[in-house]
Every structure is written in C-alpha cells, then in structure tokens.
Image 1 (tube, helix red, strand yellow):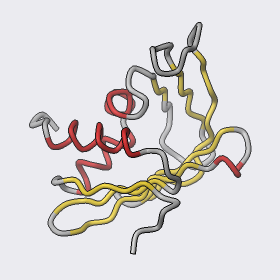
Image 2: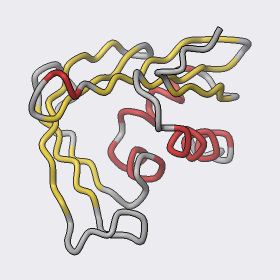
Image 3: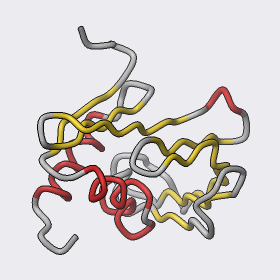
Image 4: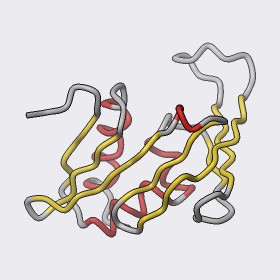
Length: 128
C-alpha cells in the first residue's frame, strides 16, 4: 500500500551510489530542481546549506533565489533531511535497499519529476 503523501522511486543502483547522488552538491544540482545550485560546506546535523534556485521557464523567477536550509539529519546510506527556516518545512530523503537496488522516498508528494531525474542520472551514469 503506497502512502499518498510521499514520493518514491526504485533505482537500479547500490545504496552507496544513490547516497552520493542525494548528498553531493554537483550531483544534487543535476536532478533536484535542475540548474539550481547547492552549497553544502559540511554534511552534518545543524549545518547550513545554501540552495539557490535559478530562474527558468517553470518558476518564472526574475532573478536567482538563494535559500538557507538547515540539515536536520544525516544517516549515511539511510536518510538526509533538511528544512527551510522552521522544522515544519522538513524535507526528508530516505533510502532503502530493495530488490538489488535502492528505493528513494521523499516525505512529501510532488517530487515525482525530481525522482525521475535522479533515476535517469544514476542509472545512466557509469562514472559514479
């Protein structure tokens, strides 16, 4: 039974590979709101991330929009979560090993397109 409040996808790759894709700046930029940039000085609880949304046809922004995110949880190969300003805005990315691959789940819905990008990036990239 799928939880309708979440977004999830199965990726044909090891959990360690997927973990890199969801926590490394250069890889995040390629699938999570593509072209938006990430600065993660330190991957640790309580540290800040600068996430900058770049203007594109989808978001209609006039100029780039930097946002400061706070890391809520870092459990290697398991969970990466962060929030914007208040903890009610928490976004959690959870990884689970499943069927010789990895299931990636966001704690909220609306990430289907990003997850499809992530799957394409990881499965289509031999350079990991």
